[in-house]
Amino acid sequence: MKKQLETIFVCANCGNEFPKWSGQCSACHEWNSLREVKSLGKKIKGTTTRVARTGEVKNLSKIEGRPQGSAHTITFSTDINEFDRVLGKGIVRGQVVLFAGEPGIGKSTLLTQLLGKIGGLYVAAEETAEQIALRVERLGLDKDKFNILETNVVEEIEEIIERTKNVFKIVVVDSIQMVSCAESSGTPGSLTQIRESTFRLVEMAKKSGIAIFIVGHVTKEGDIAGPKMLEHMVDTVLYFEGEKNGELRILRVNKNRFGPTDEVGVFKMEEKGLREISSEEVSLIDSKVPQIGSTISMVMEGSRPLLVEIQALVTESFSQIPKRIFSGIDYNRGQLLVAVAQKVLGIPLYKEDVFVAVSGGIKISDPGVDLAVIGAIYSSYKNLPLTLKSVFNLNPSAVKAASPLDKGDLKQKAPVLMGEVSLLGKVRKVKMEERRVKEIKSLGLEVLKIEEIGELKKYSA
Ligand code: TYD
Ligand code: MG
Image (cartoon, rainbow, N blue to C red; front, top):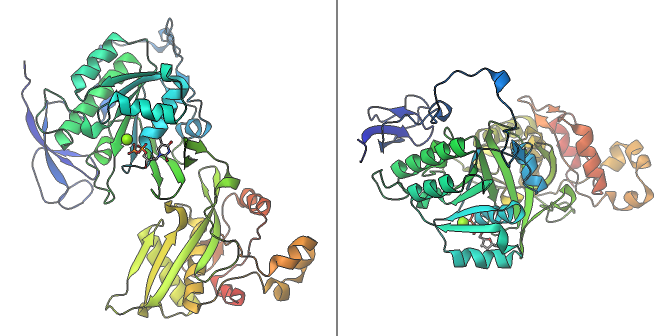
């Protein structure tokens, strides 16, 4: 029997639900973000309370953390180090992970590799079994590990999970935008369908103990027909980022009921799939020779140090309001750094368009990158590269300490800039400085230590 559908309005930005439509979400204050959703009458937010439970009170002393007779332990490894680190200790039984990213970034590839390691059920809602077989062959994985279910109907997934309860540890649903629920209205990919299907998958995971990875596509504009709204419903949200044309991919955790939320995993997309890489291999730097408008910084994303290049382009503006475009750093932070540079370095940026980008298409949340952003802006404005050259004149002891090998090319080296910049232009020490410096030295680079951004003037050659 079809259940009665109820109309509610869900904010696509924050996921809050309302009985009536309004132009602005009263929770997150976003405009025009409420979407009509037909629901089966269950409240989706705060899923933990709504998963089919018995309603019986249990004393915890009678409950085993490790379910008896179950083939699977509470947490298990993904067998991929970077993946485990991002998740915390690994995958938890019954965990629901939303795996979000732009189309073509490598979501299906990484999850195929995950199943290649630990086996499981792959629900192919987007591709055919042949296409997946092709990918499995290309990746050189063991086909035996894969069980494919070609469907885009959530009821069928439910039935299979019910029947195979203790067979699979994990199920991958690729992708949620293609899955629909027969009981619900709307076309696949609509908010109503995505929300209802996810809700059903979450219920299944909690009932069966199977961990479910739900793939969700995110569009460039960030209007994710889904992920934002789904964040409330799942245990963990992972974002897979990078520049499609580049090789580097960052796996970032955005929400996690069972682990840290500041870790990142780093991969390289190669001929034979995604390879985990060490910090030394993260080469986001075009050149270690100083270039106009470019600086190098060592940032920490979680416990991973990453060497990044910041590029700035400062050009005379012909519009009334000069352009400020930042990619990879927060817009408001970028605005603030432009203002500090203008005031403290005395460069008239109000007449200039300023563009700042982080190489490799990665997003940086570490404020330790501030100094490098200001350095790149200054260098571009002055049309001069920032070098270590003046270290020879200003800091003879540093030169003495350098190895004979270093001394020769110190002049040509691009310095690494690190530090959070205050509104007054003072440079604050970064957290975990020793860890970063060690990494920098191991890459044969030098840190430029300064206390105020005004000092940058001495280092432009
Ligand atoms: P895919 O995992 O299909 O992306 P998503 O599921 O996020 O949409 O990845 C697609 C891209 O990855 C495609 O452009 C080809 C590339 N790729 C490789 O470079 N190497 C590989 O081994 C595989 C399987 C894909
Ligand atoms: Mg895919």
